[in-house]
Image 1: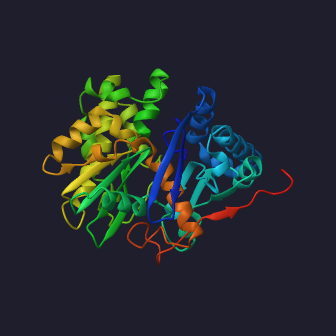
Image 2: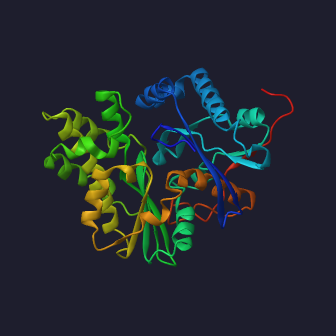
Image 3: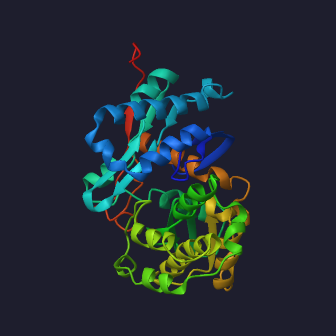
Length: 357
């Protein structure tokens, strides 16, 4: 799994039937800075790929080869039956029923000589779903496995933030708003670093409250879930913060508050106030985000520590889990998680060809 943080590839070797999972080994493959710069340049104008098929094929090949490099020396490779390959999301627009991931699953299957499962979002989009979030079915498993008090939420703070709610009967999922994406972009542009380590920059600034008030009035927050976003949704707010007559630290603090306030707003629209909450994704390492959320939700039990042993690899576990659900024809998107018309499985299977392409 390579998420919208663009930091590298999370790899999990698991045994799963799509209803339970045993994690045997994890590995993180960090992208080189030159590769990260390529991804950031594409992210700034992803639509140019729609008009340049040659560039798209070139990038598909690059992404697939990076994933091959990441797993070719994995010590358990011979034992692996399937590889779940999400690809690198560079554009997601649920209104257009379009979600674009870089990567060529057939090429990866040919290179690694294993069966590859990919294109997890396509079937959901075909049946009028948002194509995201994909995580709720796995989050539900984690809530049950760890006996979190119900109702319970898992909030994933990645490039975009999304939420899973489970009360023992209703599984609800939706994107809540910005995650780390705007923060990471702004830090990279101004410092060359790829994220705000421990939220240190945000702690030094002040909030531009007028921007936050305007942001929280966006029509997205009045939409009933399920609903989905792209990393670049709310660009108009991001650009407004960039152009503020304020310090670098104030801008980082304000961007961080966009994430915090959108999560607070999301909790308010749930059918029942949760008794427990757990945070996953890169954002749970940002002390500024976590301290503000903990202060606001002080009456909710924070169960993040129960996931801490595998917390960095939950998304790669998720892709393995979804891959197994593809193999066993089990649904992984639902009307209350993506808006799809009926519970659906998804993904496509790629067998290695005898002759490499």
